Amino acid sequence: MTPFLLLFLAFQAAASEPAAAAGAPPAPPVSAAAPAPSAAAPPVPPSAAPSAGAPPPRRIDDLSRPLTGAVPQGSYEEGVKGAFSRTQSLQGPLDGTWTLKDAAGAGLYRVQLVDPGFGGGRMEGAWSDLHAAASGFFTGVSRDGARLILQFTEPGVGVAVATLDPRPGGGFAGELSIADAGREPRKSAVTLVRP
Image (cartoon, rainbow, N blue to C red; front, side, top):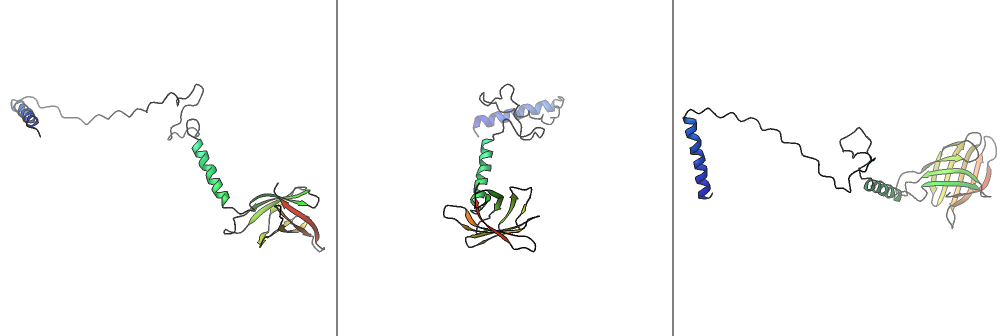
């Protein structure tokens, strides 16, 4: 400490002692510190100020309104789209919507497949008859090399098995066999294509 500061502190201490010895009333007790004023909200730049008619900005801890308005949506939406794209990139090539058509090109069934890829779990899916109010899940979806086999039971029609091989131009071609109870299976040529 500098000598001047030491001298000042000593003077302050000496000045307070005689007042206490002379019978001066004791100094009032020091009360607890008053609460500090709450921090004011940071100023809002004019470009970020809400326009007339726009909802007021929502605080993150305000649960009374849905998360809309001043909350930045762009980065969140981009994150969701990115996560969806990464998940889809892990799916196998058969994942998605297909149409099973007859030899003339008329749609028979809409097919939705879930293909976890060659390193994932088993394939599964659902079907919907395009000519009747019938739909359901496949009882069997399998790959035998490049061949795709779809099996399902349609009430009132019978057990259907589609055996399909890949076509050079994309999609699959093969045979649909429908077996009614106690009858010889009916077989017809079919294709499986993207809609």
